[in-house]
Image (cartoon, rainbow, N blue to C red; front, side, top):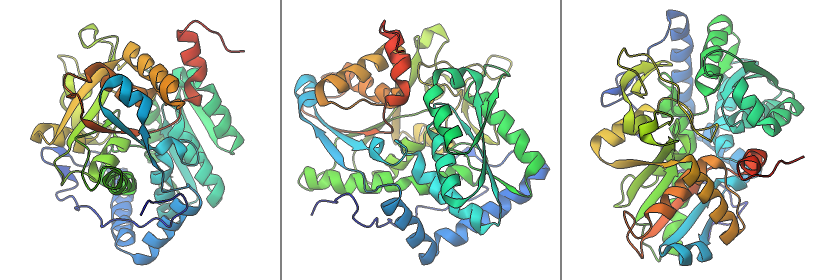
Length: 411
């Protein structure tokens, strides 16, 4: 029986609890100033207790159903499938309240914030979707909200900045460094060190110190759990041959992969190749990164020969982060997931082809996964394969940017 919108969300069983301070193989851990250790230990304990609590899980599932609008559907793309020669299914996170998967994680973290008795949340954001989700839930729960956003992203994501401010959040443009997502995280961490007694830092991806990579994955695994059941219904009990999603920090991808780790499906993450991997202007941290520590976690990061973090580049504000979540690094190291990339131009092509064939306008982040699929259909993706792609968000936030790239200036 199909899972209809508004059907009460049923959470799957919790995933494995990381050990040794949240390490995934050689990656993960907790590398933070001493002032933050008590807050992280408190968060870990509160989450452990809450995630094992039927009461908490029921409250979270109720919000996912009645506020976020879950379950989201899986849409079969008949015209795109015909064009590419592969069967394409989309997991539609663009249809959630606020327009992306980010709302799943933020609802969970807001419930934890209330349990910890804190009144203020801070967040970082690149494309603005996590900032919008945080501001939205802060309004719902009556929390004070501050969002740090790189000045470059403030300009190219003006619509989301306006939405955050409308929702009552304070948006602080960050001018330092490359003025993008990495620098927004730096400033958010500085704020948290100074205000940790009454502030919760709502990290938006599976990055940062333990317990964040684990906790955010658990709040996002609803995407993969739903997608597995929905795909099997469409495919007569079978799993997709390939499950793909874009990867920056990697929360939509890890949430999707969580539902398929124990299947035979190929798991494919698509990073930002920017202007090309040889140009040095990209965000392909798994393909071109090396192990290191940034923002409290050991993972793969873009670094120069002296170990200094390099600037990432992507047409997408949500993918220009110079690192990746530690669980993705571990999945790549083990070979369970494979990671490829798509250039800015390929993402633009993916953006256009999905709109033209299916009437669905994707976020530029997800357009990378569509662009990769369009390039590899009939090659690395064999003809006749079934491919599930998670559409992490909708593309209205990117309309002005894409229009300008295509030669049209919106008023």
